[in-house]
Image (cartoon, rainbow, N blue to C red; front, side):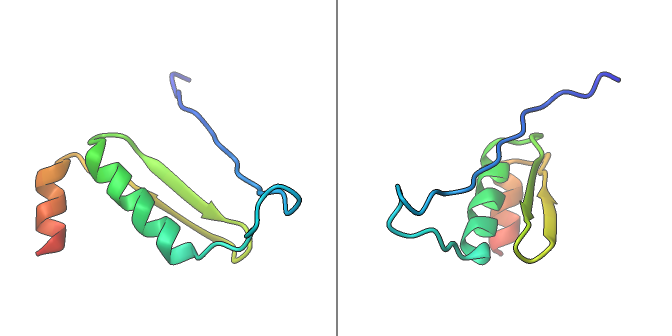
Length: 70
């Protein structure tokens, strides 16, 4: 397979971070914005707390972001 990519897993440690509770909607919006800014890059967001998984990939980049806002 010629599949490539990077996987990042983030599990905050309560001994280090003041807050370890994150709002899925905030993260989802941020990852969507990142996908718009990096056209053609697929970002897969998985929240294991709620068995939620979605992906973002926009070939149009910023022009597609403008359409999304309208």
